[in-house]
Structure formats: C-alpha cells, structure tokens
Image 1 (cartoon, rainbow, N blue to C red):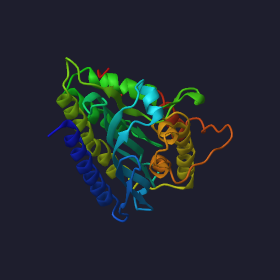
Image 2 (cartoon, one colour):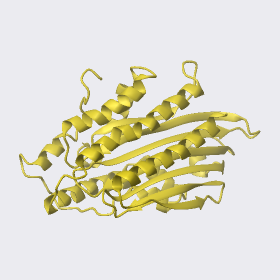
Image 3 (cartoon, rainbow, N blue to C red):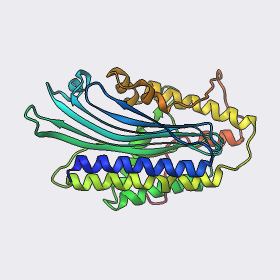
Image 4 (spheres, helix red, strand yellow):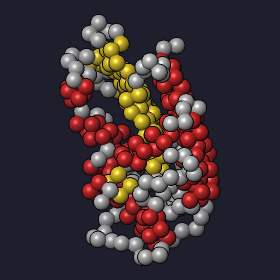
Length: 306
C-alpha cells in the first residue's frame, strides 16, 4: 500500500477510535458527522460534539483534498502549476469542567506532484498540546511522557526537539510571550531523506497518533468529576480567551485556511463555546489561578528529557 493510502486509512481509523473513546467517557453526548466536499477535489468528515457530561464542545475532523494547488500555496512553496494532495486528522476538545484540560492534536501528510503526475515532494506534520486551566504537575508529566515514549522509538533526540518546537509555536507573542498551555510536541515538513525513509516517517506519525488517547484519557478520567464553582468557570472562560487570541492571531493553519477559501466551519471548529475578556486582569497572588500562570512558560516536564 502506498504511503498516501496507508496514512489515509490510518487517520480514518483513528478518527473512529477517538470519537468512540470520547463518547464513552462522556456518557451522554454523541458526535454528529458532517460530510463535506471540496469544489476543487476531495472532501472530509467533520465530527462535532456538544453539551455533554464531560465535553462542552469539541470536534474530530478528517480531510483528504486534492487538485490544483491554490495560488497562495503555490506562492508559499515557490512552484507553478502543480497538483497536490493533503490529508490529515485534526481535533480540539473543550471540556465543561474547568479541572479538565482542553486538548488539541493534528497529524497530516502532504504530497506535491510534477506536471506529469509524478511525486515531486512530500512531508508529514503534526503534534499534540495540552491547555489546562488548573493542573497537577503529575498530569503534565504524564502527557509529555506519553509522547516522549512514542518519539523515543525513532530516536532519543526527537522528543526534546519537537517539544521545543511546540513551546516556540504555541505562544501568544502579543501577551509577553505567554504560552497557550503546557505544550507537547510539534513537528512539520518532515521529508524523507538519506537518514529516514517515508515509511519511517509514516510509522513515526502513526506512533504519535496512537499515543494521543493514552496521553489524554487518564487525565480526563481523573479530573472530570472534581467539583467546581462559578469562580472556576470564570477563570476557564478567561483563559479560553487567550486560546481564541492564539488561534485567530498566530495559528498558521487557521490563517492559511481562511486565506485559501478553506471550509470556515471546520477551520473555526477549534474555538471554545464560551470565552471572556477582562481589562488588565491579574489573578490573586498565591491563588490556584496564579499558580497556573506560572506553568505558562517552557519547562522540562520530564527529568533528564532535554
């Protein structure tokens, strides 16, 4: 099976597995599937969940699109009249309980073709990151350790490198370089070369995709029934405001999708259902909220990891 077909099969299976796991842990809400077609070729399956016991809003989407490379993409890649194929899975889950972290992940693959249809270029990208509102340090360690173990199968240098790339990417630079959350891993433009085959990169992407539920579900199980009050929800909504700021100001995928006439509903699926902004707000010193702010800088979550 070609790399493309195997990865497409993988993301569709992963979408089914993740949605089933989330429905089970929620116990009430189920995903609604919205299939869509792209005018230029291909389409996707957007699945959304809302108003559940655990998940206030979330989405797990897959897409497989192909055709003539949009002009904005052609300019970015410095190519002319080219055909392309892009496929991937993307998810964001916003839990109801402020003690359960928001999570984001995506895994994608891109192919670019010569005019005669032969493969010109290909690369993998992806990652996962966690955005808590309140947090126990051991949960942050668990999330990072899970992805470190997935990466370590392919080289001890990969987790530190991709953790750093995640720390450098998910940052609200307009907020004095405040991190969106506690990071995870992030990689892009992983191309086959003399040291790594396309098959190795495929296996690497699959290993990280398969690590996602192991990284997140135990944290959800541990925190979903913690009692909370209006103060906790207010802080959650305030921090969600920073999440919105990152997605609309800095996130390359969001900006690129909107500029290339992508499917707006799917692109903005990542935004939370409720968020708030308050002028010059600072949490009370010594509070749990202030403690969370201290976590919003890059740190070593695993001893001797980097």
